[in-house]
Structures are given as structure tokens and as C-alpha cells.
Length: 199
Length: 94
Image 1 (cartoon, each protein chain N blue to C red):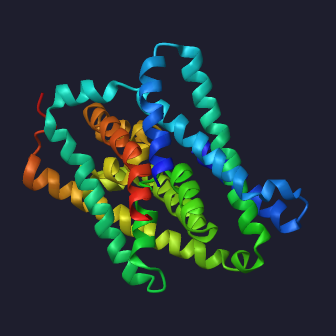
Image 2: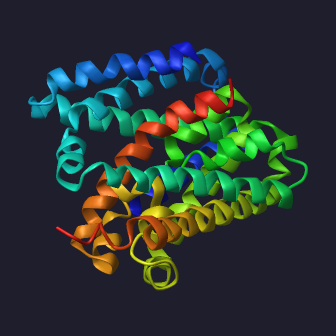
């Protein structure tokens, strides 16, 4: 929660300072953002390598646990297809790309800004923040409506960190382990899916 | 696209090799955070300097909310169906 507020305030500060036109030109240089993104992706890759919990969970819970993130991915894309009908001026590919953030707003919005445009990047940022916040606030309701996998699904990639405490609280320790696995799987999937959708 | 995916793939073995060094793990965490803050600040700047985009903030928010809620419901429904028809509570079993 605190994390998303900090992120949102950096974004809003940028909006405001950009609007007031008080920033030096080199800050708006495209090259800078491009190299910063490459550096970020390298760091993300390193974090993936740091964390080996995934493999022990897979061993303990068998392959069936893999079905959880796979179904979450399919369900998210089905939901995005429905959303594309509700916002007819956006192409399906754009809506799918926004959905492919799975709540991982920081990386997906930055990548989409570079690969498409700042407009879609901003939609991705807000959309994925809303997904995280809805999970945090609605976890008990999600468990009641969709069962214990409900908050794991709605948390998407955030189920391994920011929304994990609330999932453990309302769905139990056991589903916390599933959440860590599913969240990691989706976190790794985000950059690949986003690149795939927009290339 | 190849550069983006290449950066991630190059990072993984590096991370695997360095995972037992807490100071490096910590530094990577902090750097990741600041890279994200910086890039989102820049995203804000590009939105702010573009008057055309800025005037569309309301519709950006509305679309974001629609997409987000549809994706959330879709994924939760899929997870429900998975548990009900395929796993049948097997995740609870030790």
C-alpha cells in the first residue's frame, strides 16, 4: 500500500513538474528513459535469479500448482477481451497489454510507455494499481465469492509480495504458499508477455 | 524486443551466481526501486508536458478502472473454476 502511494506520488510529481515546464530538456530525453529501462530489466532478471523458493514449492506441491498462474493468465486475458468490448476505441492488443501487467504496475507501465506511448503507459499504471488496491481492500469478499484462490488470482503478480499478507490472513498459510508461487510465475511472465503482445 | 528480453535473460544467471551475497541482493533491490521511481517520474513528465494527453486524464482513469476490474473478475472466475472442476480442493491436501 505504502509502496503504491510512493510510486503514485513520483508519477504525479512528474505530471505536475512537466505541466509547469520547469524541468531541463535533458530530462525529457528519450535515450535516458531507454537506457534506464534496460538497466531496470537487467535488475529484474537478477532478482528472478536470486529467488529459488519457486523450485521447492513446485517440488512440494507437484506440478498441479502450475495450473494456478496459467488459469489466472487465461482468465485475465478473457477479462481483457470483455473490457475491449466496453472501450471500443482501444484496440484489443492494447487492452491485452494493459491486462498483462497482472498488477505489476511499475514494470508494465514503463515497458508499455517505451513500446507504445505514454498514454497507454499511464492507463497500464493506473489499471494495475487499481488491481492491487482492489485485492488489498476486497480480499475477504473475494474469498467469499470465488473461494480461497480468489485473492491469489486477483492479486496476480503482487500475490508474492504486496498482497501476500492479506492473502495469508483471509485464505490461510497454505494458500500463501500457492500465492508466492503464482505471484513469482506471473512476475516473470509480465515482461515476456508485454514484449510478445507489442512486438 | 530482443534487447528487452535479452536484458532479463542476462540478469538471471547473474542473479543465481550472486544470490548468496546479501549486500548485492540489497543493492539490486534498492537500485530496482530507484529505477522504477525515476522511470515513472519520467512517465509523469511526458504526460504533463503533453497538453493533449493531460486533458484526457479523466478518460485514462476510467479506462484503467474498466480494464482492471474486468481482468480481476476474469482471473478470479478462472481460479474458481480451476478449484471447483479440476483441482477439487487438492491444494489443501498435504
